[in-house]
Amino acid sequence: MRVFLSLSAVVWHEARVGAEVPDPAVVTAAARLLRAGGLVAIPTETVYGLAGDAANPDAVRRIFAAKGRPADHPLIVHVAAAAAIAPWAAAVPDTAWRLADAFWPGPLTLILPRSPAVSPLVTGGRDTVALRVPAHPLTRAILAAFGGGVAAPSANRFGRISPTTAAHVRADLGDRVDLVVDGGPCDVGIESTIVDLSVPDPAILRLGAVTADALAAVLGRPVAVITGGPVKAPGQLPSHYAPRAALEVVTAAALASRVAALEAAGARVAAVGYEGEGQGAHGRGAVPTSDLGYARALYAALRAADADGVDVIVMVEPPDGPLAEALRDRLGRAAAPRPGDHAPRER
Image 1 (tube, rainbow, N blue to C red):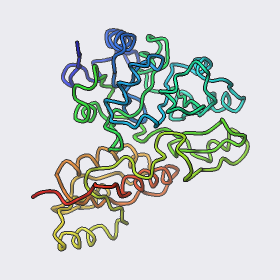
Image 2 (image 1 turned 30 degrees about the horizontal axis):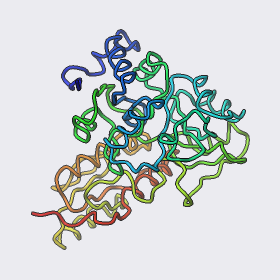
Image 3 (image 1 turned 30 degrees about the vertical axis):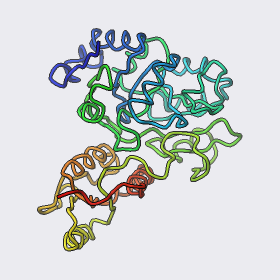
């Protein structure tokens, strides 16, 4: 039987006891469903994940089916603590433990050689596995109660805008998921940094809140960002995180004129600018002027603009700051053309 904890039934302030202790009933229900092969949408500090038992091939197949995700696109295995990665990796180098000590629990994913026990369904047929310890206390409690690892890509349809609230999950997946755990809006708001440790020189495969400078400070050497090449981790496809509408990213100074030009050409337009700067009749949300605030608001703002059925979303570029490069990466992929997408909608 499918179970859905609605927003009215479970919100974060009701799903915990005291300041940081999650409600045992929520934790028990989620862990029980995971053991039974169910799919549970879980909150993390990055985005909401669609979790299933990573050791259960049927659960993993359900994840791919629910998302419409290509079978060769690898998943990230989430565990409760750094020590729990050992059964999933054939070898764990010292660099992995150093990064884990510095950044876990948190928005960092490590790519390691996979253990032979790990199903190739999880890794997309690759000989590496992606591992992470999320920071959200509710999800960490669920993982601890479950006692294993969960494969947990973003809880949305493949290639589309990532979910940062439980409402986003419900809108995207409906009854494809057995349980949605509402942990409130995500604190970071963009996906984890992914670092490949299966190669001699650690390399960033996906940018995120853990920056190259932060990684270099721990490892004592620069960490390169890899662009292009074969897909080895989530978030490397040219088009990803995409709204249904076309997306254009412009400077704050150019926002109004670009909206006017598109409207003059007959397009239906939604504008997303900085907070405190009027967007006019086309305004469909605003983002903060700090890089962390922009990241937290990004996907919700894109979803709100896309919900209006417009042809084009014009969004202000991210502000400078440590997360700017990761934000530009997300926006560049969200704006990239997709075959058959972004045709003008019926009026």
